[in-house]
Structures are given as structure tokens and as C-alpha cells.
Image (cartoon, rainbow, N blue to C red; front, side):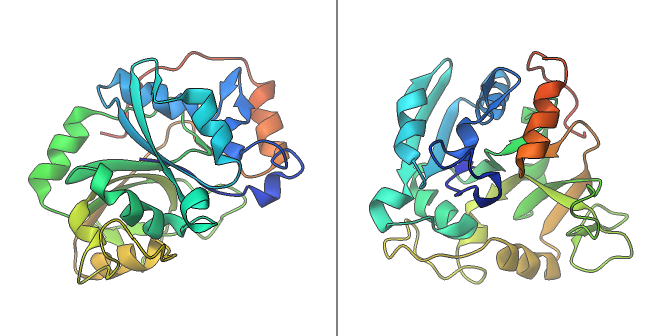
Amino acid sequence: MILAAGRGERMRPLTDERPKPLLEVQGKPLMQWPMEALAASGFAQLVVNTDWLGEQIATRFGPRHGACNIVYSHEGRDFGGALETAGGIVRALPLLGDVFWVLAGDVFAPDFAFSQAAVDDFVGGGRLAHLWLVPNPPHHPRGDFGISPDGLALNDAPAKHTFSTIGLYRAALFAPPYCDIPAGNPGGVRAPLAPLLRAAMADGLVSAELYQGAWTDVGTPERLAALNAEKRRPARGGPGGR
């Protein structure tokens, strides 16, 4: 699932007439980078949620783009606004399998490998989520979560890293006792993801690892301009931290 429902307030005026995931980075829409990386690794069934100017995303990519088959969850059309991350995932849950990737369509991580080996390890481990963390960028110096010596994600730790937005999840994380929103979220409940993750972390059911490849949260026009000032690069499957 690619999260593409954000308003992109900090990117205004660039996002006044174009949704943030369609802003171009090095010659292609920002969200197209992970789409192509996922498809190159064999994950070609995509769910994309939308809100602000979401019809532009559906028009740009349609139901099929390259090797990707795309189903849209139009939160803005159905509920008048975005449902936040957990609310959006639960809304799309009937379209997802028992285990699935989730990532934000406004993060640039061109070398991240969405590998089948990572999925197999996750399935075999029995946890509810596996998160990729990154070194803290200047705009988020305190980080989000720690990592224990045995690879568990920690709410509290001496050193914290920033959540990259890339993760593997089981559908069970979005059901009781961690989430009480019915699958499909028929009521359009808005709910953040962090409380679910923190509750599952407290039960030792979330693992994590540090990814140190290229990664940018494209949250301001200045960060977008800096990326576009770099030499263009082809999408490729570098190490995903494993």
C-alpha cells in the first residue's frame, strides 16, 4: 500500500494544484519511484489511497502502470477527507493480504530493496510489524523508535532513529486488541498509526532495523529542490538493510 492522501501543507504553493506524490523528483513523479521498485521485486499489486486532488493520481497512473496493477481507495471522495494512516490502512484492509508493505508516497528512497527475503523473514518471525528506521535527519533530531540488541522496536531507548515510513505489517495489527475499527472502516474513522505500533511494541510484537541508504522525507520545497539538483539516477534495487 502506498499512502498518497496527504495535503502537503508544507509544500504549498506547489501542492495547491497538484498532489504531493505527483511532484517530480529527478524526472518522474515522487510516488513512481517506489511503485517501480516494488514491481521490480515482484510486488506488482498495489493499493493507493487518495484524498487531496486524488483524481489526478488515478488519472496519471490508471488501473495499470507498467507492471503495476493499481486499486485506489478514494478517502476524499468517500468520506470528505483523509482518514490518517491507520484509518486509511483499515479502509483498504479488504484489498490487502494477510502480510503487506506500507510506505508513504512522499518519501524518496531510490535504493531501498523491497525483497521477498524480507517478507519471508517477517512471516517466519511471527511479529505484527517490521519497521525500517533511518538515521535522524536535521529536521527530526530526536527520532521515533529505538532498536534492541535482538532487533525489537522500542518505545523508549537511549538512542532513537526516525521511522522511514517503510514497513511490513500483518492484518492482525489492525484488529483487536490493537485496533477496534471494523475492517473496511465503513464509518470513515480517522486514526493515526503510532498508537497501534506503540501498543504492539510494548508486547514485543514489532521488530525493526536501521536502513542507511539514501532517504529523504520530501516535506519542503527546499528538500525537493535539493533532490532535483542532484544528478539523475535510474531506479535500482540496492540493499534494503538485510
